[in-house]
Length: 274
Image (cartoon, rainbow, N blue to C red; front, side, top):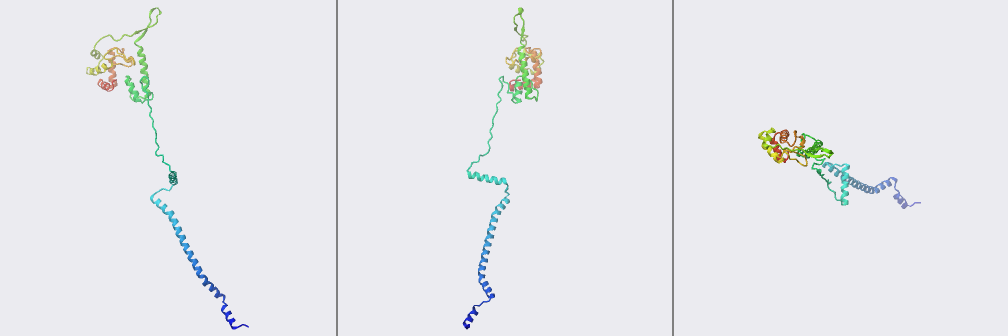
């Protein structure tokens, strides 16, 4: 038999299932609330961290694009190279230095310019030898004229001597070709050569310095001969030592090459040859 006390205790302790679920819900609610709050705080921190990372990546890139800085592979490699140089403490080599050299074209043994010398040097040399050079001639053409003049000079040097056979089979002997012995004055020679009297002063100046008015003057090295030192001597018609023939040739040379005796005189005073 159950007592009244036991009945009240059992009644008080007996809880329906619905009440138990409600009680459990009320007990777990604070814990779930705390867990939800923690998750919310972590979500906020995660969002802030993601935003900071994104800002750290985008801000420099945006600034570089705003300043117009290229972001090519070459720029990246160049920056890496600079970092390497700075880390290795290397000194830049600086700008490239280019050396230079000079080539000296030494004149030939006979005083002629080097075969590779500029054409201007060859023209000046040819004119110093009284060799007429056509305008616009190339260096090879001037050299050919000089060589031809040298050959003619060598032949002219042989002209004053001829081989004369003596009787009895004796060896040939060198006989000197007679020089000019006709006499006369420079005025007579210039007049006979057809030189205008107004040009006599220019002619006198040049001839006085070329030969001293000696009709038989001869340059031992070049073979130039006569009053105006014609080179080669064989170019003077009638004989290079004849004063009238020499001046006649010189008159044509002065007018043909320089335009007048006055121009020939001006050239001679500047260059000391003509």
